[in-house]
Length: 362
Image 1: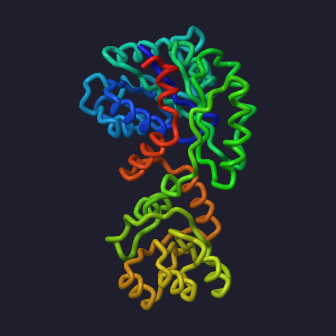
Image 2: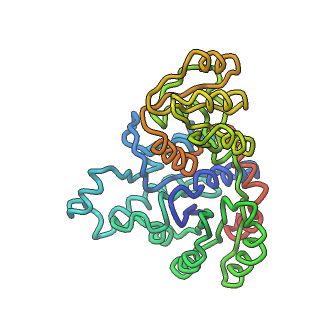
Image 3: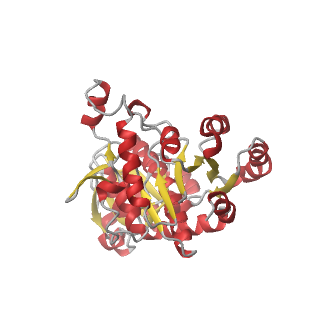
């Protein structure tokens, strides 16, 4: 029974998106899929024991919650906590030297694969994460005897050298690579030059996924939570989407010039800058993020309610909040139903599913 490991060259590269997209596509084709995430890095307590937050999300997205085999502990036999790392570093963690942890993962895999047409195995971090405990992806792929796809997310450039190294290290287990989140300005270069180069070196390029603003977005309500802020107006509009941000520290004239070019941009501005706040509100920004724990005046508060634009109050300064926003939009997890649908559509449209299925024999 074939299995497919979904790994990546770095963390936050789109493993959940690709895993869910592939799972839904395989299910649509009539295949009975199983799923696991061998090593969890996002611990969460459940009635069944310690589990991984990502694994629970993917299980739900694939409709496997009612499957008795897909218990939290079966899906994620190893969950990394701070104590786990300390025990590993200080030699107190049993199973590292003799491969016992990898054997534990293999036993869980064999339990889940029964009766399935294909198993999807999601990675955590990069293909080398977990090496300290003998649970890196390269080793696990060989231990489980399954194929792997490697996702490489565009960040300034693609990691073509690393993809070549992984081709050598995975040997015959590499089914191909997926080049993810490629900006429009680089699509021609990637498809016309890099992809053919990788193919010429024996690395099948299974898909080039263009950058999609929705996949890198966050709702106003989730943004407030992640920033540790408080929504003080237009509470019923916290489902609006934020896909970028603009800092309102400049003069109003300059701000207006930049603001017109930004779509779905949250405006981060000091609580005392009512001039910029009003321009942003009238320009229909998805939300205002007011820094320094300063509340707006009554005019701004009233206009935000009339225009149905939420205002978030945060304690930190503008620079600190902007850095947080940058990290959030780069590394925000796929959790919304709309993102699940969009991710599935991207996979169905841009991945060579027939080529992948042929490689897996399903």
